[in-house]
Figure (cartoon, one colour):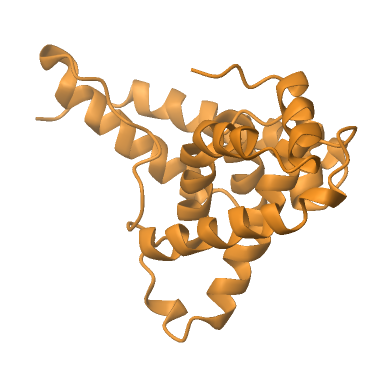
Length: 190
C-alpha cells in the first residue's frame, strides 16, 4: 500500500507536471477508492460516481502541467470530484429519484459472528444519525473522518474557512455523541 502523506502527494504533483505516467498510475491506484466513496456520497449512484471519476482523472491529466506541488493535490482531487459530481447531478433529469440508500456502504460492519447482529444495528443507527446532520456539516464530517482529509484540505474542498470546518465537525461529533448516549441507554429489544 502506498503511503499517502503530504510529501507523497507533492511528489506526485511534480511527477505529473513532467508527464510521468507511472506516477499517474500510482496516484490513480492510491486514491481511486476514497474518491469513489466520496463521489457515491454526493451522487448516491455508483454509475454516476464511476463517470465522475473518469472525468476527474482525465481532467487531471489534461491540467497536469499547471499543478503546483506546494498546493494540496489531495484537496484538489476531492474538490474536482465534488464539483464534477454536483455538475452531474444538476444535469441529471431524475435527480429527485436518487435514493439516499443507493451507493456504497461507507461504514462496513465487522465480520465476527457473535457480534454481527449488534454491529449491524449500530452501523445502521450511525448512518442514520450522520444522515440527520445538515448537508454541509455531514460533508465536512465524512471528508474529515472517513476520507481522512485535514481540516485545511476539507476547507479547500468545500470552499470555506478551516475554522468553519472545525465548527461543523465539533457540532457533528456532539450530535453523534448525544445520539449514541441515548442509544446505549435504551433497552435492547429482540
